Length: 251
Image 1 (cartoon, rainbow, N blue to C red):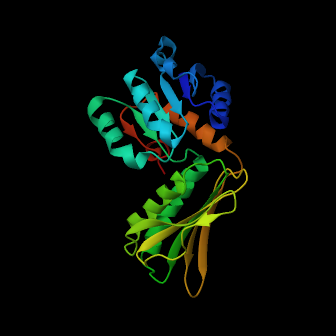
Image 2 (spheres, one colour):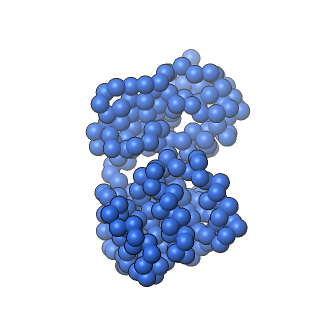
Image 3 (cartoon, rainbow, N blue to C red):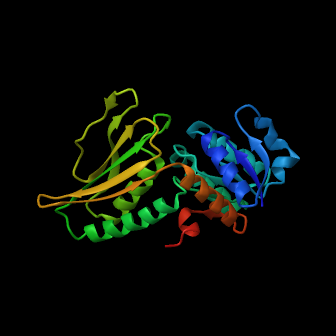
């Protein structure tokens, strides 16, 4: 399969290595210094573009790939709330193809399935209050993480006693913090920590006066995310439209 890479930082380079090891060809690499390469035959020859950049760049990058008729897998977070509905409409109505996910890790996909099922069970036990905490490296720009937001939205969907999620305490890499641990009872608090080079830890806690139940996913490295992105590209090459991680990992 011919793959274009949009973004060639640590994640992009890891995706490149995994894609090559699985027998794929990298036909174009676009980074901050060469955006004009979207308009090249090399980029247009790609069957799928894999996009891992920043919240401010992702939307424009995906639109540029669409203009060249290239399908996209995107793992950039921090932009989908503003532009998600537009992207869905372009896929449904204009023949574009995008698979976006806040996290491509197989382990996180399993964790999300467990999270949804646990929330369904906990809906019957209102004595348990729920909170969510995520920890990532100091270079991550958005907080809470896209994965934390996805997990929180799953919980809110399944728990009748929670109407929405809200930001809690945000601890920055320089030691400063903002936010509060208090929130209305019908809101799900999501805390975020930025520390060192942590690839990603997500913990969901159900606490009651009697006991506490927690589930945690802890990534050892970014390699699981990169492998999942390549698996997603292989899936997208054979499918069209607005696609999700649930289409790829159908648990």
